[in-house]
Length: 184
Image 1: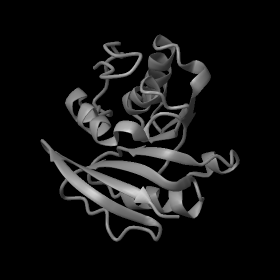
Image 2: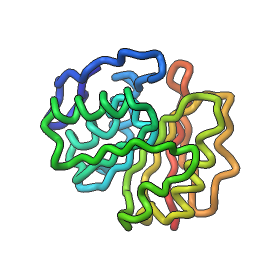
Image 3: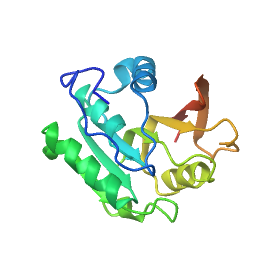
Image 4: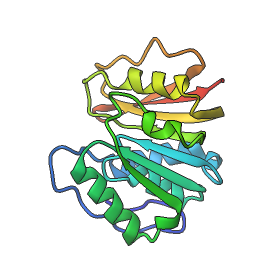
């Protein structure tokens, strides 16, 4: 795994050591960021079910202001922290170990809103809709925020919470990537 674009282009990230993390492929990340194009620079990024941290780190490489990485796995949090240190992004990054399936209370006290959210939960476990509901309920999204949801074709992500709209869904191998926008 490596960073695809921006100032860290070509930087290798530490590999996944456990089967618990399913990293987003370089090709899929490149496609997503090509679609996002100019919507990354200066944004506050939230990387939920962050795994390796590759999506948030890629956003930082492309000019995002700051990224918050949230994952429940101790191994994933350690790997994200290692990758952040290797890229020298500590001052722009916050890593939180939290069970997103319960709630997003870990973010409520910051009063921070996000313009770009990545959501890449374990497939077919029903985590997508609750996470989207928490984002809307806790008012964590900026107006016109972009949300990128990676999910399996068998996992429905509708009906969406009020305030979110799907702009498109694309298939990449065995994964679907749905692009949402916040209309809050």
